[in-house]
Image (cartoon, rainbow, N blue to C red; front, top):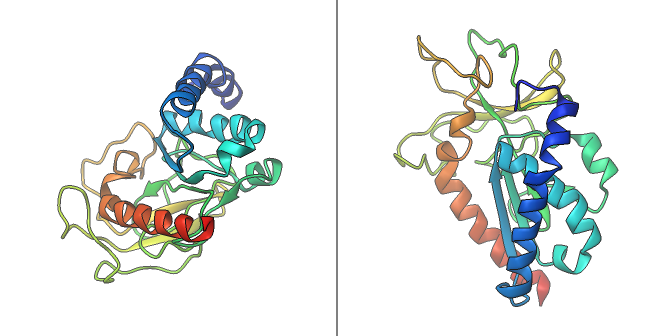
Length: 220
């Protein structure tokens, strides 16, 4: 689907994929949720579908949205202009805010240069740092005590920094991982698309707990 134009992609995704996901979510809310708070999570095309669930379904069902702790929607674009259009939604700015969208797109840099393309990134796309949980351009080092390591190895840690590429016009999450000599990615020449979750798996788990506790405190 990424070979299609952005307009064609949206036409496809907002059809059967979105309606199927929406029907499944409505079934869960109606039959299994019992009024409890919840977390949403997606990646890549799943985050694209989740984008429609957030913009359309949540706007039409504010009583459901108020129970959303957070949406982890990694590996796709959530643009600044999108949040301006759908003003009921907010981009995450810290580690404990709730009812927010959390997203990033991992890339490497080579010789201090950005990649030239990333098929899941569109102009204005935002990213947050999953080690500091701040939406800023400060680097967190590999030995930062807040860095909890990857899914496969808690000791696998790299420097992490959100940066804005003025040429492509969007933010990416730069991982200080050396570029392998034979690196290949169909998503982008410097993309680490398949590692958006796994590189920060333990940080995501701990962050979900913090947001749950924060939600409980504000819901009292």
